[in-house]
Length: 273
Image 1 (tube, rainbow, N blue to C red):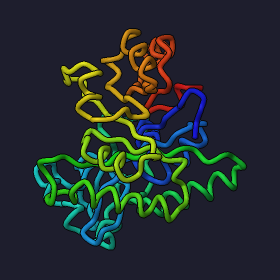
Image 2 (image 1 turned 120 degrees about the vertical axis):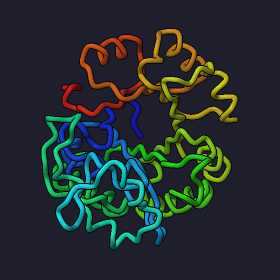
Image 3 (image 1 turned 90 degrees about the horizontal axis):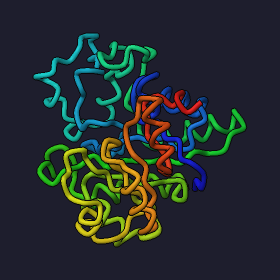
Image 4 (image 1 turned 30 degrees about the horizontal axis):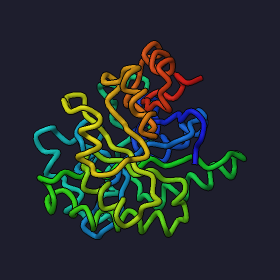
């Protein structure tokens, strides 16, 4: 568990390496992040896979035959309808990313969360570093239960099954825009740290959002545009840490640090150095 300023690498370090891949996590560790931020989805055979989308996004995917997926077809490559044996045949590291020109291109697959955790443990052991935290987002929405993911209870239990098996409970934060998964966690795993994610267009006050959640989360994680000194103060008054996303500008990062945020999520962890 981190007690200092939390340097979080978004999807590992999306600005520098292919997102949500083992190489991205290793690079983020080299850049001294304290937390690896990532996303989780579920396959048809109930495997927990590290992926932002529950499908193969056209920006990053090369099919097994070497061709690229088109934007109009991407959602037909639904990971929730695929076994992991098929998922791992798609490459997500070689296609040049239109928004991240500094991203290094390497062959990479969407890894099992279990394999990613093992790789991180082995990597920090070889480098003689301490194990970072894992900030894992449940990629679910009420409107797509049973279409792109299981319901919140099954999703959380599958995710926690891996976390418990790998014995890293104290190193994990579960974050979500889908408050249902956080509510299930709070009820069944009250010691688990939780982070409520907030979109930039959410017009409710922080207090109204916490009321909608139904309990006090460990972390309030808003789009960075929403952060003000007042918001930071109100979070701290309630005993909640505030860690905004996704801050890719050094000047904005310094401004937020000046406001006394507790951490920052960035695509470019090299900005912390």
